[in-house]
Length: 417
Image 1 (tube, one colour):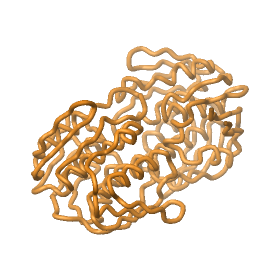
Image 2 (cartoon, rainbow, N blue to C red):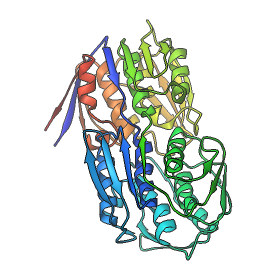
Image 3 (cartoon, rainbow, N blue to C red):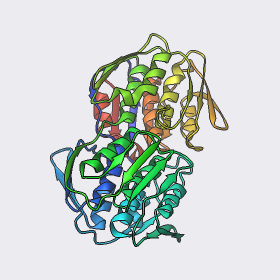
Image 4 (cartoon, one colour):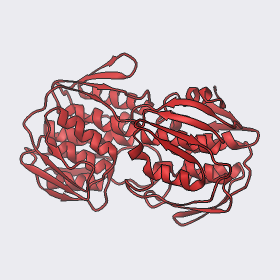
C-alpha cells in the first residue's frame, strides 16, 4: 500500500512553482470536443484526473498527443461514439463535463453518473435542467443520463445555485447552439473565465465570463487554437498555508494574486506577512497564529477547497476558530483523522469549532478526499513525531509532484510503498 510519511519540519524556505489549474484543464479538455481541428494546450499539470480525462477523450474518438513535458495536442475531428464509458466516468466527477460538448456537437450524449471525492451531494440536476431549456430531451435511468436534440436553441437560463460544473457544461452546450443563450446566476470562478477564453480563442462568442451573467452567441464551427492554462489557485493556496504553518518564508511562483484574495486576507489576519507581486506571492510566517472565523462561499468568497488546509493551520492558533462550511455538507471528513493527531475540534451542523494551541502528534491517518489529504500533510509537518498517510491516490488527483516540491523547501516527507 502506497503511503506518505511526514515528520515535523519547521522554517521551510525557498521558491516553489505552481502548475496549471486542475479545475481549468479538465473543462478545457472537454471543450476540445467542440472543435474538429487541433487544439494545443500548455502548462498542463501531471495529475491522475488529467490522465483519466485524456483516456475518456480517446475513448470518444479524439486523438491526444503529448508535446514535451506539459503540453498536449488534441484533435476531435472524428467522434466515434457519444457514450462515455462507466469505468472512466465513475472515477472522476469532472468527466461529466463531456456531456455538453457531445450534445451540441453530436446531438446525442449518453453519460453515466459521475464519481469523484465523497465530500457530499453534488447533484447534476442544474446541468440537466439547463440542457432541457436548450431543447434537449433528457432521460435519466439505470445510472446514466441520455440526452438527445435535433438542434439546441439558445435561451435564458437561471441557475438556482452558481454551480461551477453546470455553468461550464451549459457554456459548452451553448457554444454551437442556434441563437443566444444567457446564463443568470452563473459561477464566477477564474476557471470559468479560462474556459471561456479558450473557447473564444477557437472562434466562440462568449461575453461576461467571471460575472453573474454570461452571454453565449452560438457559432457554426470552431477552429484550431493554442492556449495556456491559468495557474492553480488551490495548489498555490495550499503552499501558502504550508509556509505560514511551518514558520516558513516561501516565494510561490506562477500565481495570479487576484485569484487568491480571500486566502491572502485570512493569512494576513492570522498574523502572516504576505507580499504580492505580478505573478508571485511571498509568505512569511508570523511569530504567533491568531484565531480566525472562516465561512466558505462561492467565488469570490473563501474557497471550500482551502477549508481543510486552514483547519490544520489553525491548530496552532491562540484562541478558538470557527469554520462554517456552506458549499458541501460532508466536507468535514478530515476532522476524524485530524482528531487522531490531537486536534481539538467539535463539529456542530455546518460549523467546526477549533480550540487552538493544542499540539499535534504524528499518527496513522488516511486521506478521505483530495483536499483532506493536503491538510493531513500540513498537519504532519507541524506535528511532533511521524505521520503516516494512506489512500494517497486522492492527493495525486490534485497535486503534481507535491513530495518533491515540499522537499525542495526542506520538508521531511517521502513516499513509501
